[in-house]
Image 1 (cartoon, one colour):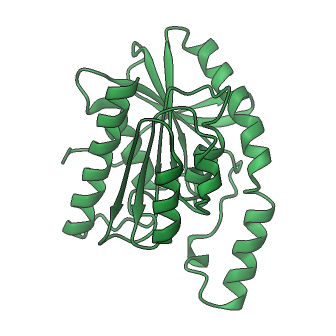
Image 2 (tube, rainbow, N blue to C red):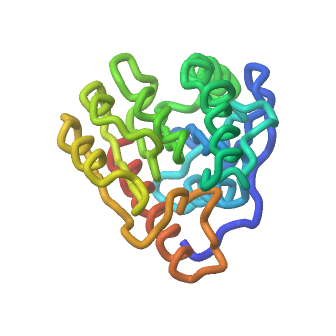
Length: 235
């Protein structure tokens, strides 16, 4: 887990959505990555490589669509510690990051990916921050996925957990509301693993991870190992 590439991925045009992909084309299992609102950051691209290649018994094709079509949020808006940042971030969540648009695109991307890689037999999904919320909403009745992982999930809603129908892992940071995380876990009626990384800030496995910090890097890698183990057990 200590070795990962500085950059990953080949870009494909899948259903008119630019999609980064990595992993062996012979892999029979695939993972859809739903990035955070800051888009294709190095920490997530490195994470995609870890997911694709680190489990020698269970390698994956990993697909990361650019749902924001080249216009992600500006990372300087977070944390929203003044009125201007708050307005910009709020507007982004109400427009570009409104869940219905992304939820409508997911089946199209998966179906197109299946056509380009017909050997794929099963799909998992991982989402970061905002992407974690999308994972919750994508894991109910009729889901395309066999297992789901969300890290530093935004907008944790215990009511979402009641509708989840597949094994789900939540890796929370110290910044998510602890009561909501606990209630979410309690409401899950499926195989689950819910854990809080109590020393880590929101986004510790994605855009806000400072991988020059040895403690952050250790927990980043531990999180990806946990995700891989969960996918291995449930796909």
